[in-house]
Image (spheres, each protein chain N blue to C red):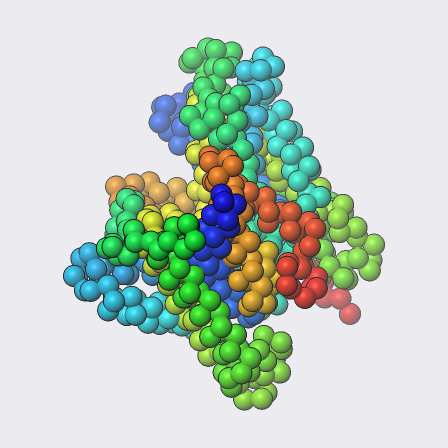
Length: 311
Length: 288
């Protein structure tokens, strides 16, 4: 039953561009990008225990990679989007020798500092347009009428892809290693889990997905600036969505994104009050419902009861 | 000559940075409680004084002590009703809760005061300087520096000589055991958070007197405070002073050599220290 519903949802989401108007399509794309970004952050923070407050570095790098690849190498935008994710993943791989020396709070703030460094460096880089930003050179690769459906479909692909990736990873043996490491590092090491290798994989995958989702988002805006690309607002949204939805749960980012957009759209006339409401909701979630909205559905699925007690 | 000028200005700026770090050093370094909202406590404290002086017409010398008391109360209350509930072996719930808190405070400030720059007018004090051996030194930076050193000395005394300080250090060493010795752990945490918030507020007020602030200044201040305590060495009060002075020097030198760099070299210094000497300048060796 659940599978049929999920399949039906996917079909409806896929054919949406043939029925929906421009603004609906744009909102749909935004929602899907936030789902993908939160799912990617959830993979690192919720499952892997690598809580980062600097994922806006990956958002910015993914966005700028798309613009640079399409302008300097002339790569078609549709190929440049996945490649932007790969570039972001490689960047993540390159910074791990420094950042993986840090744990917990130090890692979280260290990532934030790293993101600030990247932002300042990009603002000072003339070939990336400096502080004033860049237009998307590859915008002419696609007919104008296809721009927003293309952005939407790519967002759908990234959101579904990231969700399936997390789902598949966590069902695999690798997922067991990831969660064992998060729950008890000493115990995990003693049964042969290699902490560094596991964390590296999770972190790079998370960065790659983040970069791809960001590339889709900046593909639709046709212009990129350092202030928009490396905005702390990305991390704020991602963290609130994931925390409210449920960290370390597959449905968390989806439920959190739903609440985020309901609040944002209904409080659209009241300035920043939706952020205040979200912040309060996130704090309350930490206090009374640490499993997030997703844990409210647990009683209906009886997941926990299928786990056999160990003697 | 320029070198000495840079040295003096760097150290004086470092005094202010050290003050930002001092509050965080108490709560995060000594008590090991994560507080991402530290920068917002500082900026919120400054806005309390802005409200009192600009909107209520209270004289500055009355507004500042009242604001510090209010900041203490807010920190105390938040720890008691909120942060104490999410503490545990895992620092992540506290990190996420205070992150949420910081965004709420920041956006409340935007809604109430708008996103414009605000400054506290201290009249002639802001511009007056004294001339020492051919160098012109601002009076206000010297006052800030003196306040910072004085507070470091006070806190050092409080932690190492007073009964309260003994309870604080004992709670820091083993929060489980002190409860058996009759120490109210929740109250010790709340008191230190209050003290940390008041120190942050003072630093924020001095920042608003020295230059200007916006509701978004908090994040940058948190990163500076974090850099100060990591560079100085975690858990060491005097280390934070050293960390502040080093960071102040780096910022002033960077501003002279590369005017558009902003906080870039401070951030790079943090990564360098974490690579080369993770325990900081004065810290004991801990695994992180």
